[in-house]
Amino acid sequence: MIIREILALIAFLVGTFFGLFGMIGLFRFRDPYSRLHAGSLCGTTAVFSYLIALLLLAPSVAIGARVFIILVFFLISAPTGSSIVAKFIWESEDATRQRSAMKREDKSL
Image (cartoon, rainbow, N blue to C red; front, side, top):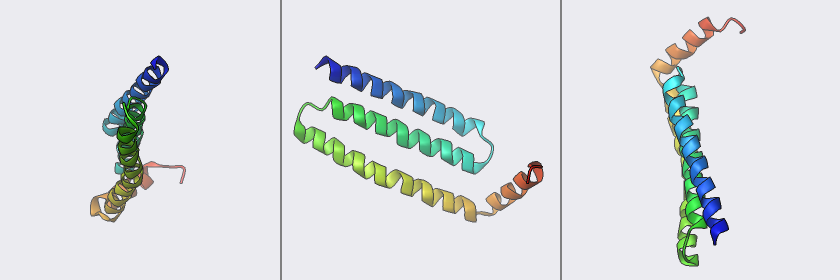
């Protein structure tokens, strides 16, 4: 019993770690693609870790099955949402200006 609780605590701490540093990345990065990457990493990894911890602490098989179904749905929907946002950013006029500015700043190209 105590091993499950320790593993759940570790999963909660990992989720908090990724969530905190993902939020820092949202404010630190300049271009929208890096911000999107930080946000999707923050969302997917942190929530996945929290759901794993909840799965470990589930008091019954029925509740564990429900958490597992939520986990599978989240793993399908989170990258899909990030992909839709990335496509919207790519097609927006502001992103075209951002890409042009990045090419001018990067001398290695």
